[in-house]
Length: 407
Ligand code: ASP
Ligand code: MG
Image 1 (tube, protein in one colour):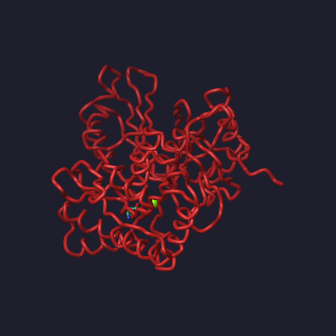
Image 2 (tube, helix red, strand yellow):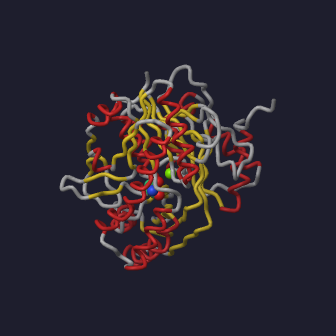
Image 3 (cartoon, helix red, strand yellow):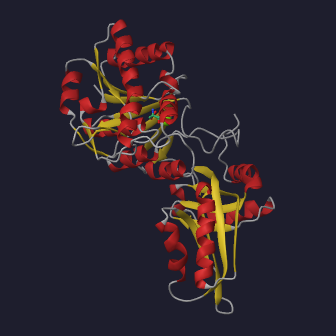
């Protein structure tokens, strides 16, 4: 007998028909003798609808009341799904986050889970019931309702799985797994059978939005095997797990990219101790996250300094940089929003040399100019002009033989 946590996202529970289809899938797992905890999101569009209602009243509603409001979306789904399970003759009980006692900190709208008491849920499971838990919500020490941030139901599912020491946490969604890259950019992208937590974190943080990043971090930390699979199609999806010796050692597992980048350069800064701090200090002080950083070798006692930020932060960062330029006596400030970041991700990189040079060679052959480069143990990223995104991703996908073998 296995204990499985299943999570169904908004589209998977977007209508009564779909909720009934989920109930049938869940009941089938219980019928084969396994224990099931189901975590559900709000019905698709519901969270956005609730946000819009609040916005009609106030541009800055109280964050406590916002969480009270948004948590209702998931509460609707748990009740309906439990009713649908009852209709199939399957015993089931719904719980809000507070009822399971998913204890969180008090950061409304982005709370972190501190503790879950798995015992009452386990008692229900042992009594043969399916347990249905509202995703995305918890309760703080004082009993206030909190929410975990958009996409937070993924994290609820992983946290439940960790607390119950589940055999697997299955995330059912509208895609059938994790792909080598976004199939909308490269139609030859292939579904991966397995990927490591580390790689998935890189893929997720670089913009392949299959799972909430926090959920992947949590799963890696507590060693919860995580599987992404489709609600609508049969298939084994993609298993996110630890690196194993027998894991097919591809050099590269996938290509991630991000269109949300912007680049800023400050030219002719006096080259002296404290330069980087005087430039980046104000930026981080304004809560702007800096991604890549490049400082040139000094020439004539001055240097150039370039960094990237999220596109949403571009104008603010540019403003700050102009102020800094005045203070430190820099020559000029320039910037552009017309850039993207393309990254090769793979744990196989650790044991294979020459990945970077092959990447640069491939881009050169396509006439794509690389503006910045950064590397980590399992990732190589380049910044290029946004007009080369599709071309670059496809060329790299071919060069590293990521496409499905033609049979
Ligand atoms: N309903 C919430 C959202 O839309 C949480 C979730 O679906 O994971 O972000
Ligand atoms: Mg989601």
